[in-house]
Length: 138
Image 1 (cartoon, rainbow, N blue to C red):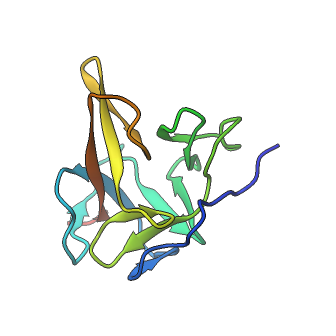
Image 2: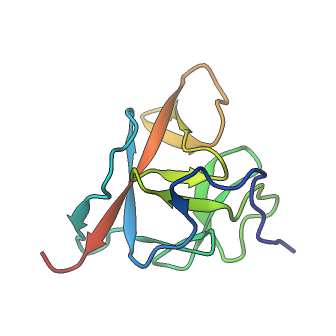
């Protein structure tokens, strides 16, 4: 059995736990800047939703930090042993936050990157996840 679990500390100032639009997440090495940009959504684009601190995608999967600290979408239900399944926010500068932090880590794994909420290895670097509002008609 799993539960909606958020990190301690609440969201940073200027962040909300619910938005009324679908969005994609764009990794960035520099902090995002307001306002949230608007992009055209292509067919097959994974879109996210945020309601009451719960992050889901267009397939209903739950955005979570799993036991190895990786950020991924699973289920429902969330993956067994998930650490955080709630506590997400969208900030006025366009960043995604988890609890009190807007910082994530990307770690090279072969030829691609995995995303984490902590630095787990020497090949990891700080990133930010830029929220980009998706519109279907451009």
